[in-house]
Length: 67
Image (cartoon, rainbow, N blue to C red):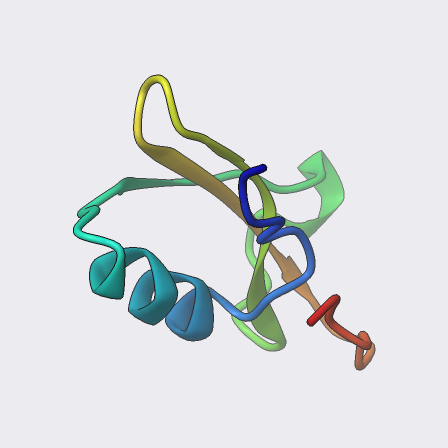
């Protein structure tokens, strides 16, 4: 069973993946109206282990990560 990274802050997800011997690319996405916003926390939307890509977006409200 693979670990679920959804909701984790980008830095935490990268640390976990690096400990597992992975060095994923990071793809940042956002809603069109938020393209210029720089505040908030980059959080994982999904991790694709086949392509080793983390897809992240910026969230302004605090989120309880799945741990």
